[in-house]
Image 1 (spheres, rainbow, N blue to C red):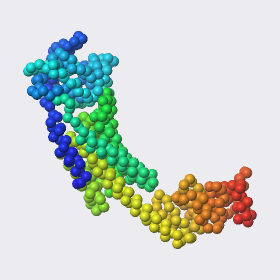
Image 2 (image 1 turned 30 degrees about the vertical axis):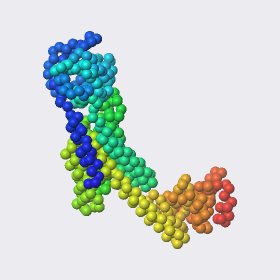
Image 3 (image 1 turned 45 degrees about the horizontal axis):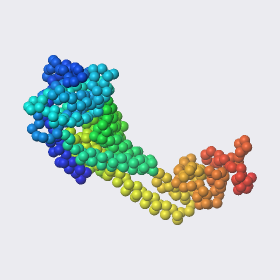
Image 4 (image 1 turned 90 degrees about the vertical axis):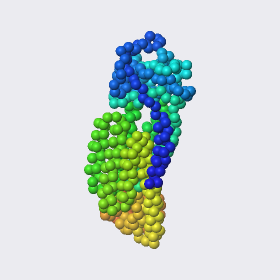
Length: 472
C-alpha cells in the first residue's frame, strides 16, 4: 500500500489543476475559404459534424467566441497533427507551420502550440475566430488527429508536478534496469534479465510520454511517438507475464506468454492510441494476476503480495482511466521492480556470505579444490582433475568424469597451490601427470595424451621438463 501513496498524492494535487484547466468547447463550422494576402474570405459554412479532421485535406473552421469577462491574457491553443493559421476578427493571430491544399506546399507545424491573442484584437460581444488547417504529412491515419483548438488563459497551468513524478519514476526505473543488468552479468539468471528489460522498457516509455512537454517537435513525429508508446507498453505487458508466470506458474509460462503476445497484439486494432496502450497494459496485468492467483492457490511465497499489488493497480486504472498511461503505469513499474532489486541485492549478499563460509571450510580439506563459479561453490577432489586450462580471469577444470567446470581463479595462482604431480606444460595449461598416457609428435610440436579429453600442447621450453617427469 505504501507504494501507491505517491500516486494518490499526485491525484490529489494534480486533479484540481486539471479541472481548472478545462475550458468550454467551441461550436465550429466547416467552410470554404481563400486568402487574398489579408483576412480570409469564407463561404458555404456549415456546422462541423464529428471530430476536427484535417488529414489529407485542407480545412477551414469558423467559430464565435465571446470576449473574455476578465483582463487575463488569452491564447489560442492548438494541439494535434496539423499545420495551422488563425485569425480573430480578420486580424492574423499567428501561424503554426504553413497549411495548404497540397502536401508539397505544406510546411509542418508543431504538435502543440499557443498563439497569444493581443488585447486590441478583441471586440465587445461576439468575435469571429477562423482557423485554417491541413495535415498531409502525418503518416498513419488517426481517429482523433486534433486534441484541442481552444481559447484559454495564457500561459497555461503548469504540469510541473506531473513531470516531476514522471521523471522521478523514470530515473528510478533506469537505475533498476542498470542494477538488474549488472546482476545478470554476474549471475546469468533469466529473471534478472527480464526485470532489467521490464524496468528499461517502462523508463523509455516515461521518456516518450514526457517528450511533448519537453521538446516542441513537428507534428509528423507524433504518430511515430504514439506507435513507440504502444510498442513499449506491449513489450512491458509480455515481459511482466513472463516474469510472474516464471515465478509462480512455470509450467504454463510458454502458453501464457504466447497468449499475451496474441492478446496484446490484438489491442492494435482498438480505436485510438490511448485506448490501444491502456488495453495493452491491462492485458498484461490481468494475465500476470492469473499466474499470481495460481501461486496463491499453491501457497507460494510472495504470490499473495504480488496478486494484491496487481489488483490494486487494476482498481486504480478503472477509477482513474485518464491517468493510466500518463502516470500510474510508471509508478506501478517502479513500485514493482525497485523492491525486487533490493531483495535481489540482499539475496546475493547472503549467497556471497555462504560462499565465503564454504571457502573457509575448504581450507581444512587439502585433498579438494573449492571451485567458485557463477553457479555457486563446489568441492572437487584433486585426483579427479585431468587438466587446468587458462581462460583469462577464469580457468576451465577438465575432470575425469568428462565434465568441465569454470573456476574463478588464475592459472598462475593454481600452479602454486596444486600438489606435486601437476605440471605446467604450456603457458595456458596445467596437466595432472597421473592422468597422462604418453607423448606424441604432431608435426613439429609435441602433445601430452590424457586418459580423458583432448591432448594438451607442450611448449618447446617445457618439453624437457615433461619428458623428465614422465621418465621418457
